[in-house]
Length: 392
Image 1 (cartoon, rainbow, N blue to C red):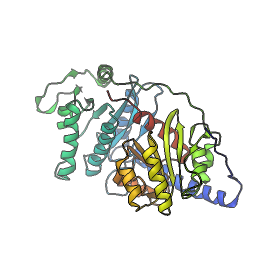
Image 2: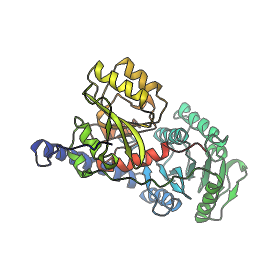
Image 3: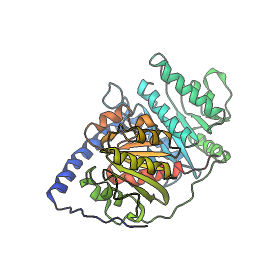
Image 4: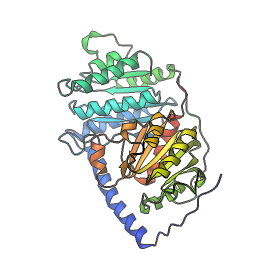
């Protein structure tokens, strides 16, 4: 497969200016994430939720946190009182959702839990709820509340394996509707508990036993060559440099470009990320030629599609191609526009780089998290491993 070359000069004034602007955005992102991790009604309780997730995860297993800024810019608590993301338990990749016992249920929390549930269902991930604290009041948004309950009922019916781990009070319907229940305390409503636990550590042990019984597929280690170029250089790149971005994301910086001399506004082709094959649509469509090229590629890609978005499109052929494509879609908004495959197209995962307005959009759950550009390859590797799983 051809290897991408680079013309980036890290000493050029334009690169230095772009890098400095990105560093300012990253400082803002890190401050927001710190507030989400330590703020709220009780920093101690927030730490407890994260410690519970860490205790459940396999030793040294990566954890891809999702929607960490939900509620940012609102009157609520940054993070919405929920710690959620993807990690390995007993070698099985799972969606883990832990509630902060000190934060009352809220509309952002409902929306965050629903989004995490959508990701779990789309990728057939076992879902583990670590429950402690009051659930959201249905009066805040009855539609969102009942959508969450509907999704849980489907989980309990076997569409996607689900485990509720009751570690405190006020668990309500979540525990009743999950496939398995583990509880330190008696469930509300005198419902039977599948696995009574003596304490939290015993609950973690029993949860691991439940995961073993799920017979879910385990991810195989995939050998992959790192990119040839320094990922730190991503900080100074602009959305107008899609090939340079890809050269710092793809395995071995290798990329088999599709119709390289046609439709110059969009870059399309095949590569791999952490050993997983992927089709790529990157750049900004500037006319019908670009759109026609992308539509043809999407119809032929036959692999999960990665969209590096930086603009909008209104071309009917491209809209139809994206909307009718049956392969998993992953989107990274690198420039503040998600028109190619934004939230309306329901990609499996949608991440953003910290451009202008990114934190506020993430606070409204318009994406699944704002990434340091240098972490993009790792996040996409976990997402692709999930998307490539066989259905259990």
